[in-house]
Amino acid sequence: MPTTSRRMGIPLDSFWRADFLFTGEEGRADEQFFLAPLNAARASTNRESSNFGY
Image (tube, rainbow, N blue to C red; front, side, top):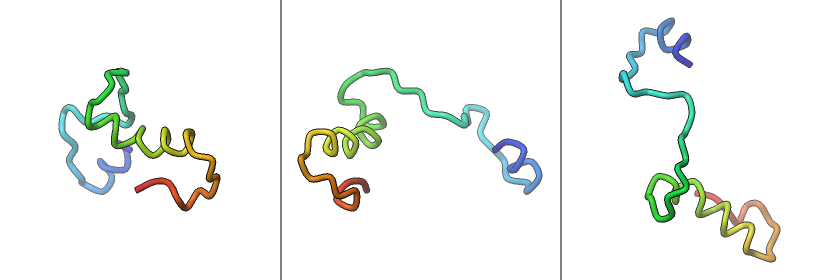
């Protein structure tokens, strides 16, 4: 991704990363954004993928 941004002249912040760091701290908003749909799907008996996600 940094190569693409350089080629296209798109600046990135010095803290920009190409991955996500999950700390395992329950309740963090950034982790809940990604994990809530996954956990809901795992807990459900409904297996229709269109019912889960944002």
